[in-house]
Length: 135
Image (tube, rainbow, N blue to C red; front, side):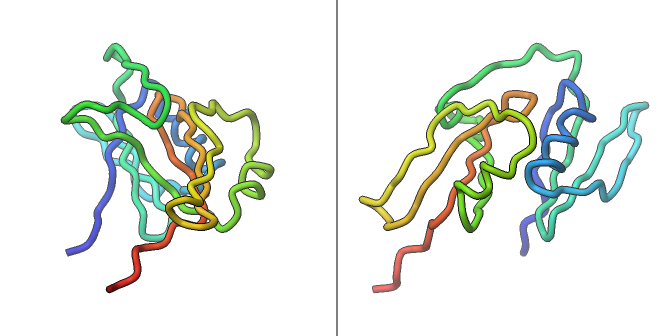
């Protein structure tokens, strides 16, 4: 088995597509029209996002590191080599919801910032995370 994709509901698919392209280098890989509505697939390496038109739905807004109740995805996460360098190169202003924070007490060098995408989805960007060594 392998990971397939994450589906995101969007107020404006073009704005959301531009955000993930500009921030993380996602490229459009396919567009499917179902029931008169386009579903846009984006790809960056082995990671895929599926963008649904949800302009008619009323949005919920979440802060910090994402919603904390069952049945909701808390946040998406991307790993970068150097968080400061990444943030310095991001085009435009980021909607930072939390951080950057350091988690050296858990993993030396682990740093994270959480931002909101155009639809309010929390996206974590971190450096330095490593799995726990085998015992």
